[in-house]
Length: 259
Image (cartoon, rainbow, N blue to C red):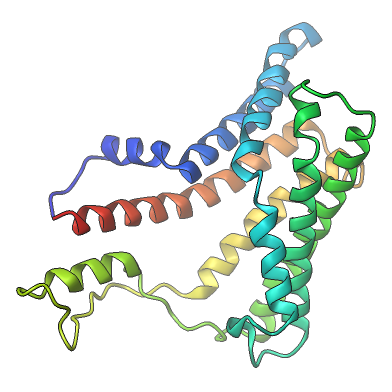
């Protein structure tokens, strides 16, 4: 397969929804940091406006995010999620809480979108948004519990995963057969395995950074805009690395499928 340049990979990344959202997230955090460093309200106003407008644009990317989140919570509570079988009750309960709280956060936030756009100004929008931040905070706390519990009690609960993407593997297996049918024993692409612990540690860093956003908005964590923006940059880079890999794998799978 022909290798592509970093510029082409970057273009592929920003063309994807998750890549573009992460770029906007990083830009918003940078604007927040720069705005907090201004020496006058007048000079800080443009940066504050940028933070607000970028934040509004990002909300459309997660507008229906409450659907899979709440569905995940129901699946865990009804024992339909096999990935959490045989790990006791604390981890499934924490995971259900995380998904449920995040789903409620996204649901309440979506109800205020018209007010945020100044299309339909509602007196209850501010209260709904405040309640949504509470659920966001609870969801991040639940995520923190999930991560710590897995690191402490289930360090090997999730086996090592191969770096190769399933879509790429399937597409390559289809190409291996000359007559158009899949081989009886498809070849397996192998690469260096990644420890699940690494993923958990990166999640721990991101959650620890992100909890400052709702915490500061609610007044529960006394930090300034510079601190919130700085930690948001860190979490954006953590998420960005993971999303970059995901987008490039999907692009590689599509390229293989069209060979």
